[in-house]
Length: 461
Ligand code: ARG
Image (cartoon, rainbow, N blue to C red; front, side):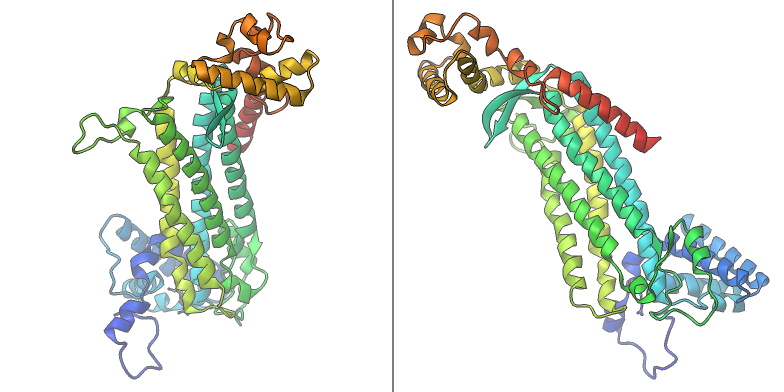
């Protein structure tokens, strides 16, 4: 048992208590951030004349050697230490002796852990953003290839109106673009440095908090030391944004699963992203999409967990806050992995354009346009709606599409129909006439695509 405290204790910690209290098994995740924070802290202590330049040199060299040895496997992070902070400090003292004991001057594990968690989360926020941009690029590529690929659009999972695949993909582009924006917002708000808050009240040493903040890439130092050690809002915001990403991926997965079903046959997931059955030789299952959908609950769980943990905690630091890590790390790993896998699956998926077209055509998706045609020929909309309803019933009975009816048949139900009805209700016309901003026509989607291209360029350059 290697602990940083013990002076005021007369008995050793009970083994179970030690294990219950320890966090090394999971806070080793931010070993590199812990070292980075210590480096800057030590430089600042020396700059401020709180420790000597020789001590600074010795400590920095010690930290370097610990980091190298862990990275190349020479030094193992074991449960012999209570947490990652104790691991680093104990090893430092082992290696460099007396100067090592000065590392923790003007610092508490409370501001130290607050810093490590914030640094780690910040890099994860950046990583999620990168993953999302990769996904946006895949979606944009599919959009560009499919501005004329007609498919049915659905409401209530019933065929509604014809749209294009570009239009459908564009809806997801919008969702994931908002997710990207959420990452930028979170980063901006969280980018304040808690180091120097001490245990809660600040410190009596003349620390230069602005220096440490800027060296670690922060906009500035947290304004209030109690808030500095006890704020986990940024984590809640990030987990909430990750939950939204997963909700989007889950909806998309659900659609891919439906589209990939034997009944729909709109898409075929590539063999490299499908799995088989141990008993049914014919099966090719969309397990990746199902797992993404399934893992969504787990990410929501992490958000619920931290919200619940934080709700009853008085200021400032309380040990409850150690519970901010395990599920959050899991949620970050899960979401980032899901985005990457989903993008790969989408990129390799093939679209059965003929099947999509036929499905749109045979689903009365042009019924609205047929009613609009009658309105343009002087029939009031409510009447037109009723007439087309009758026509649909007639077609269902005969197993045909509206376009398959002869002009005589159409005229027998409503004399306002003329020869130009066929062109007016073709799938192509239904799509190309929807020219408003954000609508499904090729023209509207080409504008959207140009917009998306410059958006991606603006956030990646
Ligand atoms: N392992 C602790 C955590 O994750 C580090 C901070 C401990 N501070 C303390 N006063 N016990 O929150």
